Image 1 (spheres, rainbow, N blue to C red):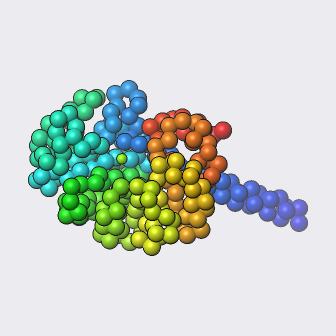
Image 2 (tube, helix red, strand yellow):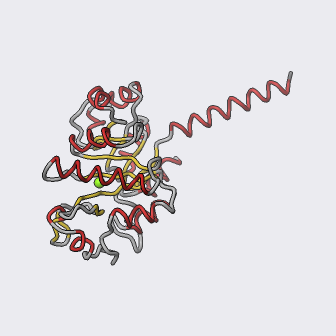
Length: 255
Ligand code: MG
């Protein structure tokens, strides 16, 4: 009888530990872990470094070039090259601030395949919906070819791109919308995994976090770089925080 009691207390402790683990906010490195020696935003090094500090995910930005190739960078115009108006050869000749060449998505995924961090792939808003659809068709195909379908999550500020990812990616692939102008109910009706909004949107509408959870969605907040806002979001039980300071966020989560 006594042993049975001890075992049931132990089982309860395990269950609550599992619950805490499941509920804990997860860390996504914004443009990879780039604020560290030898790294740069959206470099392959930044992806490797985000993985090395065990981030849940590493975020990066994707564009399609005039010759239909997919490349990784944040800026519409980077070091004088407007990516959607240039060929892949011109884009990849550009050097990032750590000396790496601007990577193609293929190079990026090829390295990502050897890691475990989740790939948080943002498609930047392009000039036309047709360009976005073409990019998404290429992305979804490449993710399948690299056997990364279970490690990718898609995000976009473009409503069209968000809906196209939902339409074209395998059912169940998480797709989040970034712009902050859709209610939890609207996101649910599109088939979104949830909002990935600027943290101020949740501070203005804190009830959205619980509404999303009740609708079976997850909540991500960007780009949170200070301890005070991190703590506010952790207390309000957001599922993911996207940050330029992943080490600080890891420390805040241990407090
Ligand atoms: Mg981004």
